[in-house]
Amino acid sequence: MSSFHETSFPLSVALGASGGPERRTDIVSLASGREVRNSRWADSRRRYDASSGIKTLDDLSAVIAFFEERRGRLYGFRFRDRADDRSCAAGLAPAPLDQRIGTGDGGTRSFQLIKTYGSSFAPYVRTIAKPVAGSVTVAVAGTTLPPGSVAVNTATGMVTLASAPANGAAVTAGFLFDVPVRFDTDQLTLELAHFNAGSLPAIPLIEVLP
Image (cartoon, rainbow, N blue to C red):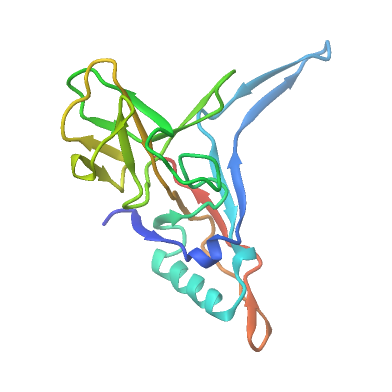
């Protein structure tokens, strides 16, 4: 059985979660007062706490059931990060020219979905492995391809075109995506404050890097 379940964390709870990207940087302070910095991770890794998203007992029950089915930390799952869930800026609709995912060479037909952060100094390229089904649009040299000419693997983020783009042609894409995560605990501590309300003080989630 796969260690990842292609199912989504309860959306109503996810939309109230907190968290974001994390990096690991070593900083060595020299005797001169200067410092040397080195990044230990090539990629960022996202952490979330979904506890603030629980508003009702129904939310609480849904999270407990979801936790039990995932067997705690054992199986990964999809999580919607409302601050960063699309190929474009938050609040805009994804469009096929949003992200450049490759350049045609006349033979290659498969391309990995990616999202690039920044542009001027040191752009960071993030692999997008969990696109939302039905949300991916692709363009070649600025022309949007019809849906039937693009196959999308929603478990890996690979898109395969019916024909290889010409040499030098820009391949771009627009999409929505989820973050692959797992629970970062094997225990949920329940607090029942009132008859019709309850809470989980912490629901830690951590990204599973592709």
